[in-house]
Amino acid sequence: MAGSHSKKPRPGDTVVLTEMPPGLLDGLPPEDQRAISEVFGKPVLLNEYDDHGRAELEFTDREGVIHFIYVDPSFIRAAEIASSSPLDTARAFVDAINHHNVDDIARLMTKDHVFIDSLGGVVRGRDKMKTGWASYFQMVSGYTITVEETFSDGPVVILLGVAQGTYAGETWTTLAAWRAKVRDDRVAEWRVYADNEPIRQLMRKAR
Image 1 (cartoon, rainbow, N blue to C red):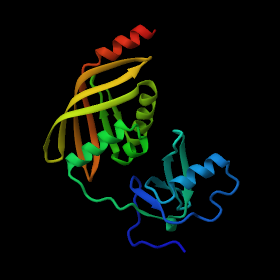
Image 2 (cartoon, rainbow, N blue to C red; image 1 turned 180 degrees about the vertical axis):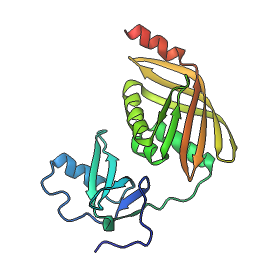
Image 3 (tube, rainbow, N blue to C red; image 1 turned 60 degrees about the horizontal axis):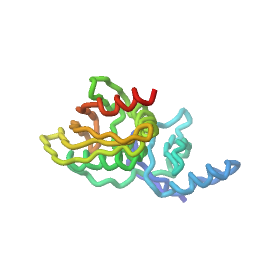
Image 4 (cartoon, one colour; image 1 turned 180 degrees about the horizontal axis):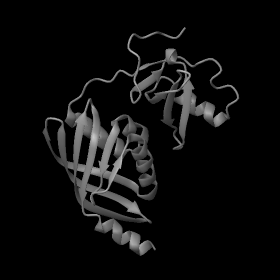
C-alpha cells in the first residue's frame, strides 16, 4: 500500500515513486516500460497536478528521450534533499551541465528560472531552458565548464574559469564567468559572460 505524507509535494519539486502504480506499464512499448522501471525510486521532476489530481512526472531516459507519466499522488513522496549553500548549489549546477544531465539541470532550476547569455539574450522559464540545454548539448558536443575561482555573497555566486566544447568536429575554448542567483537551493538566474568569437568562427567555417 502506498504511503501517505502530510506534506504534499509542490509542482517543481523533486519526487520519488514509492511504488509502481498497478497497470502503469500495461500496454506500453518495451522501451517505455524499461525507461519507467529504471527511474523507479530515483528523483524525478513533478511538473504539475492535472485536472484529475494526478501528478505529472517528467524524466529523461538514458537515450535522451523525455517521458511524462501520470500517477496518483499517493505513489510519490518528496525526494530527500539536504539543504545546501548557494555555492554548493552553483557547483551542483555546473556538474549537471558538465554531465549533460538535463534532468538534474531542470531539478536545480526554479520554475521561473532566468537564463541570460553573453549577448544579453534572455530566456525565461525552467521548461524552456531544459529544452534549450538539450538542444545546445546536441549542437556543441563535449561542452564543459572548468571553474577556477569562485566568490559568493549571500544568494549570489560568481564563478570564473573556462568554457570549452566541440562544434562541427573542431574544438574551441574561451575564458568565461558565470553569475548564479540561488533561491531555496535552486538556481533562479544563470548569467554567462564570455567571448563567443571562437565558436562563431567555427560556425562561419561550417556554413
